Length: 469
Image 1 (tube, rainbow, N blue to C red):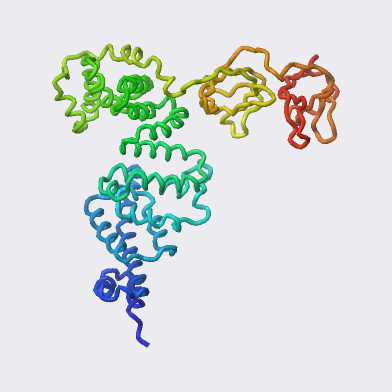
Image 2 (image 1 turned 45 degrees about the horizontal axis):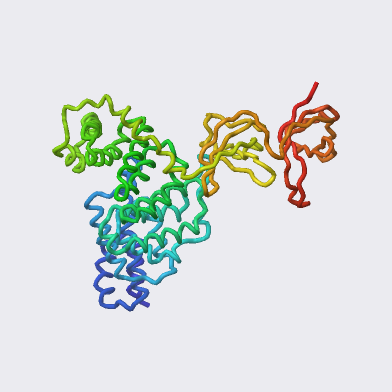
C-alpha cells in the first residue's frame, strides 16, 4: 500500500530532507486545510526548520556570553516559519505549542507573534513540575513558568506591535496567572520588577509603585531599584523623583550603572532651575560613553544639545549635591514605620535570616541582608527593627540589652531526659543547646515565653545556655 502524503512528509523530515518535504507538503496543506494528519506533519516540518535556525543561534551564544538574540536573517526566517505555524492553528492541549516554548525559552522575547501564540495557549502549555525552580549544586535557577512570564514581559516592553495586540490588562492577567502557579522563592522578585516596568510604560504609575516598593525593600543598595521607584513619580511629583534618583546615584559603585539615572535626573533638574547640576549629570554620562568607546544613544545626544547644557561645567560638586537632594528618600520606601526592639531567638536553617522575639504574641522573620553587619547576629543578642505598616521588617540594627516582655535571664540545675532535651525547673531546654557532660550542672539561661503547639499553652523555653562555674 502506497504511503499517504503525511507519511511521506514525515519520512522525508526524519531522513533530514527538509526542503524536499517542504516542496511536497506546502502546496498540499493549503489545498487541504482540513487534513489534520497533513497539518500535523507540516507543523513538525516547520518545527524542524525552526530548530535548525536555533542551532546556529545557540552555537553563537556559547561564545557570546549567552546572548541568544537572532540576527536579521535569522529573525526573518523564524518569522516566516512562525507565520505558517499560526496559520495551521493547531488544537490546544497537544505537544506542539509546548515544544515551541521549550525551543524558544532562551529568546522568546524577540518574537512577538510567538508570544501572542503561546500566551493564548498558556492554560494548557505547562506540565506538572514546570512551576518548580531548578535546584542543583550551583543553587536555584528560575522555573520554566517564571522564565516564560519574564520573556513575555520583556517582549512586551520591547515591541510596539506586541503592545498593540496584547494590552496592559491582558498582559497583567497573564503574569498574575503564572505568578499564582510558580513556586520560585529566590527569583520570583524579578517578575515583580518586570511587571512594574510594564506598568510604568503603560502609565499606570500608582499600580507600578505597589510592585516596585517590595522589590526595593529587598534591593535597597541597588541604583536601578531606586530609579524604578523614581519613575513612578515622574509625572505626579517631579520633586520626589529627583530625591529618589539622587538616592539611587549615591549607591552607584561603577559609573556604567549610573547612566540611566543620570539621564532620568538631568531634565528634571533643568526643569526646576538646577541647570548646572543637570549639566553635570549629562557630562558624567557622556564621559562614560567616551571612555567605553560607545556611540551616544539618541536620548543622551538630545540632552547634550539642550539649550541649558554647559559643556564646561565641573562635575566635582555633584556628589555633595546628590547627598543633599536625597534627604528624606527612605520615607518613600518605608512609609510609616514603627520601631521595635527584640531578642534574636534563632537563626534560620538556611543561614539567610533570623527570628527576633518581641513578646509571646509577636516575633519577626528578618532577612540577613537587612542586618547592618556582615555576619549573622548571635542568638540572645538584641536587635532594633523598623517595621512597615504591612508588617514587613525593613531595617535591622544591633541594639543594647533592654527589658523584653516575656523574656529574662534564669539560673538553675539542668536535668537532661533520655530523649535528649532538658529542663531547668519549669524551663524547657531544646536538645541542640545541650552537651551530654553538662547534665546536672548549674546553668544560666536566656529564655522566652513560647507557645507549645501541641498543648496550646505558653511556657518557658531556653534559647541560649551557659554553664556557670
